[in-house]
Amino acid sequence: MATILDKILEQKRKEIRSLEKEKLEVPEFPLRKKCSFLEMLQTGKEIAIIAEFKRASPSKGDINTELDPVSQALSYIKYGANAISVLTDTLFFKGSFAYLKSVREAVNAPVLCKDFIIDEVQIVKAKSAGANLILLIAAALDEGRLNELYTFAINNGLEVLMEVHNEDELYKALQTGARIIGVNNRDLKTFTVDLAVTEKLGPKIKRAGAFLISESGIRTKKDVQRVINAGANGILVGEAFMQTSNLESLISEMKKY
Ligand SMILES: O=C(O)c1ccccc1NCC(=O)[C@H](O)[C@H](O)COP(=O)(O)O
Image 1 (cartoon, rainbow, N blue to C red):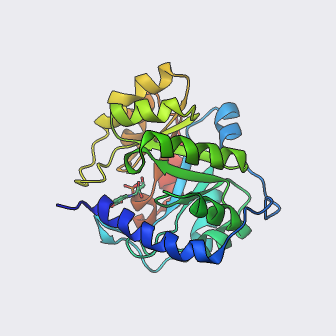
Image 2: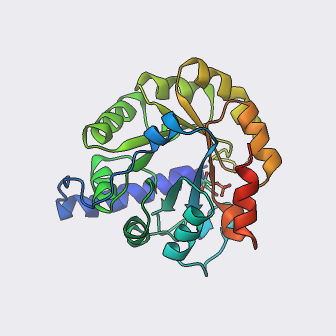
Image 3: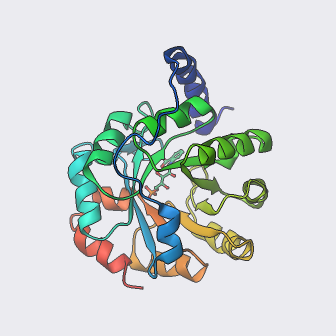
């Protein structure tokens, strides 16, 4: 039976066919802000927070459809987040490239294009919208394509958050030379979320000398402590930040390590 990831990737193949017709060209860095998340990790002393603008998801349905992307991104930065992730998939996450563009204009911090990238044309689109960082998901690509897309992104001045969920994917990811590895605690096929995934893969990532970002299912200070103990340099948080009634206190608690 087709998993949700299969369905998302099928949708992406359709989108790519229409994008190819647009004949996008790789732009020079399009906007005034050139922000490096990697440099932030290299120099930062505290846990780095990537705060995600996430209106909906396949596992939860609507999360918060009221919030405005720019106001939310500005609040994220004001309360201490280091980078902003914007979901750009429309069908499954109610996101958009328009949100990414407007967030890019509003904040002076690294912006991650959070999508399901399987083709160069999507990387060009992410760069055109002003992303500094793209997500590549090891589960969505074979080793050859993962390498090609990683190289294409780096050669075009983008940084890559390379996402894995198990040891095979981690092995594939490390082969590319990726410096920032995201461990997704959510199994994209079953939606099960378990921070033990970061605990399992964390030590291997640290031994390989890469930076570790723990993604998904992080809601409390205790969760942050747990992934820091596993070696995390950063966390990626969506749902908890989109739903809290006190964003300032949640971010500040999470940063207290
Ligand atoms: O969130 C989902 O339901 C989902 C389903 C299928 C593929 C990807 C999915 N999420 C993408 C993410 O990785 C998360 O948005 C991100 O890590 C933040 O997670 P959370 O803090 O749990 O919202």
